[in-house]
Image (cartoon, rainbow, N blue to C red; front, side, top):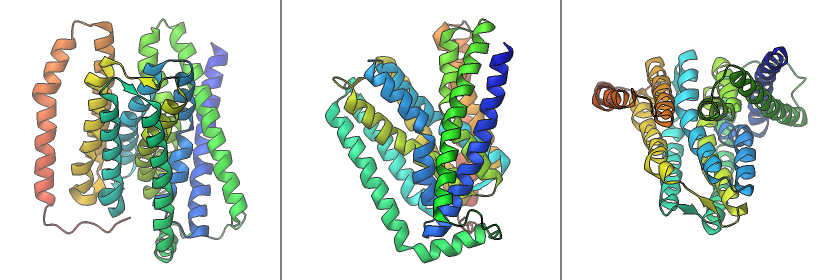
Length: 363
């Protein structure tokens, strides 16, 4: 028991240190090469923090565990928006860059729609996987090219956001790259230690494998994103905090799912349960970003609270459904009859109030 608790603490420490190194290295790297922090968050940080998802889904695909590969991607995408953005917004309201609203959110929704379309026949074949993986390459090249065209503006923006340039030990790009690589390594190791120790402790207390898989492991593969976005929000790097989440969701579908489908024998089977419920939750969460992001062009603290509440409700529903609990019917009725309509009305009122007002300056 003691060794599991010690591993949990060490894992948490590794995540914290790794996130700090990654955010610092990525932010300084953006300044050095004149690439906006948003693009760094959408690419290097987002792709790097999705390494656990890539490892889990690729391994599951090779072992013929399609449910694990699909569940990992879908669950991580839901957690990225509801849990990570929610927690980050509670630390500091997240001003949303205009590029996120007009470009990245539509791309994220588009990738989710493509995923759903491919999955409707119950299988994501190798050809579909190859197309998804090719799209992530095109997307990355497009982002970098787009950012380089506006390098002067990016440098000016970043200089305002991070004025502390007195420390020169990390001034060279090679040191910054090492910080990014070292940070990513610590994130992956820390997430692995944290998940393993949490699962072990849960089993000691008699928690079922099903509940462990639906909670600890699902959140565990998103721990790098959680740590990175929280540290980025705390340091005021809001573009990296938001870009990390949106970029990770795009990467999870195009790269993680694409690569896993490509290497799996016969592609990946998508279960009926996932097609009937979880895929649609993922798509609904992606669409939910639009009104929240457009309203005032920021994620306010109350909106972050709503995100977290819905993630708790989603997890509770999964556990109740899996265990066929007696309260499942009452819980579902409450969510559908009261909570969801109240949230929709609140968002509409908030949007109407903000309509016509001058939005705050972009981050």
